[in-house]
Image 1 (cartoon, rainbow, N blue to C red):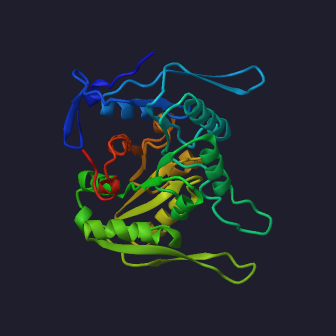
Image 2: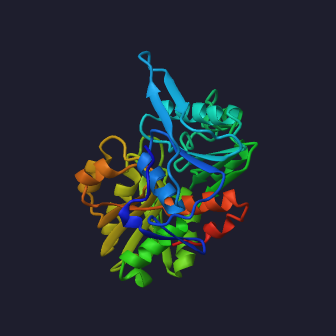
Image 3: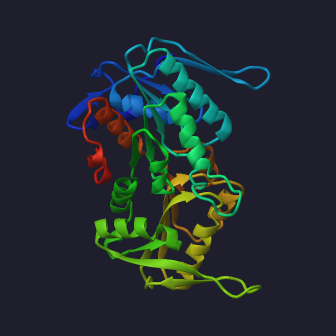
Length: 344
């Protein structure tokens, strides 16, 4: 059944064009389909574009094989398939590959995989002998399935773009994070940006530069054998608001321990802002019992159930960035504008 824009998004500006759910401006020769992983995000995207969600039947046979039926013609169309790396990840990946192939052999002119949270992104290199580079394998599978283009957000390792032999647009959540900080933290001008580990320093300093504020780093010192590692805070957060940023929260150990370190150092308030909220295991309990003022993630992964169990958990909507990336790709416009701006 076709899905239209919710009333919450009655008036939406996309680029220089104002769209409404009362008089939608139709984009020609474009179809947007949703996989099973995050249909709510897909509905927000098509709503902002003034489109209806493409008709597709997704089901499993009794032996758990995935079955996909595209319910409308895609011949000569510019097709976008929205499927995030969450939930039953392996099943959803197989579903994405089948949907890509189904559209390709149905004579779609171009098929773009929109993968807000790219799965297996942490398996981007060999950590030990005989270990696979699964992110490269996944890139090969998506290409072989028939995808012509990939749109994603905040890859865990940006070099994953080089694993593909097709164009990849890796959008950044930094503009949306910067806007959220300005809108929701009154004392942001005197706050301190913090990276919870050395790996996130580049991302953190980029946001600190945008806001023109100080930054600090939580560094883990490796001790001798049989001696527990210790953490060191490099920077001053005393009597100030600390804002930790990272790309992904899984078990939340790093974030929660980082918050404890900042509290010990005299921080008044502590926020954590992350792009992808995996929140596996007992992560919700850790957040609830932490000293964090708020734990903020984007909606690249569904958070409805988690938000009911965690009052500290908040979400940022990045559907507008994905919608604008799709619009610009469809009309062959530059996507680089989105690297520094939120198209609200």
